Length: 463
Image (tube, rainbow, N blue to C red; front, side):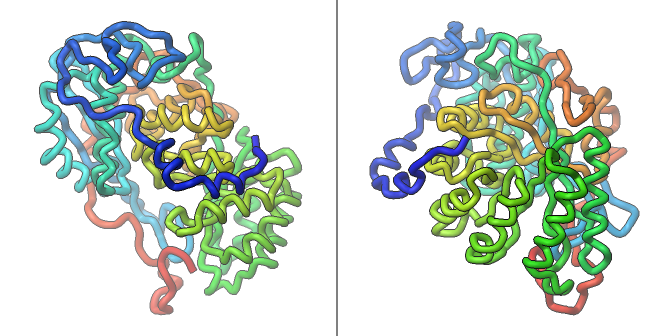
């Protein structure tokens, strides 16, 4: 729900802001069985769920230690021209970075860190730095072992994968789904609303408007109630303009009806164009949210997000898919600059995701993670949505990618846009046999230049 007086937050002094963002825990020096939290509590003692200072605090400690860690890079390569296309790029393969953590009790945890950080790079980083450090550590020290090591892009992904896999182990050890261990509720729901994330095939130079509308209608017919789409192939090449685009959005709204939720993705339009042309159109067409309208790296990102949010009283603003901790999230939810936060467990990890969810909830906003890659990321994000009080819905990539569900012996079930988490320990899935042989890793970037634009000098990402 949107709050009032957003601009008053921007005037907060730098000192006060830094004080409010001070870390509430630090990496421990001793991970032995009598480990004590910073407030003096014995972490092996159960505590009230609602008053936990970290997510694993209420769990009875067991002697389960890490014996080895394995990262397996995986790929699916597409036989056709592309898996999906947007701006000036063609995506020709999908990657995954399977993390397996082995323990002295024979329990194996599975997960992944962001494959966009490079599965081979994640493997190298883990082998060189993480495995030697964590061998022999107790898995119940999960919140301290993986204290959000965000000092590089590869480190973010690698540590997130470790944290997620440790939670799978803990869930298996306790005989409980991870989301139940995270939740403050005694009986949290195992139903998670899913939105159809696509809009990455329509080409403005080839009846893109018709393709976009047809895609939205397919998802509606399949039972989804929300569709997020990107902004098509090169605007410059196709001579697309904002007035033309708004006309297409009007046709799209008419086709899907007034109650179907529409979500628009980021695009590098100018701030003036967004405020003066796009925002009024999105408000009039009753869009559900506008995703990251301004890059978070813009020095004025906070103020611009506030202004965009104020320009659309009923349309929410979202962002944060590239963030990995609560301190990046907090200023935006406090200022009501963003109503939906989209941090991804494959960068934050489950532990930090729990803190992020708590921060979002305390400021009256919603958690709806970015979830664009495969099933190993989805299993973590789904449990976070179900396990935090701010959980709203979860993204699901609609492009074809067997690394989403075909890597599991018994994948999650989705019906009418709702995913049901199985009542099984941990993340509740098992990996198929010989996964490395079925999906051998193919090095290199997952994208190439759209051949239609070859030799024209157009940017491959946005144009």
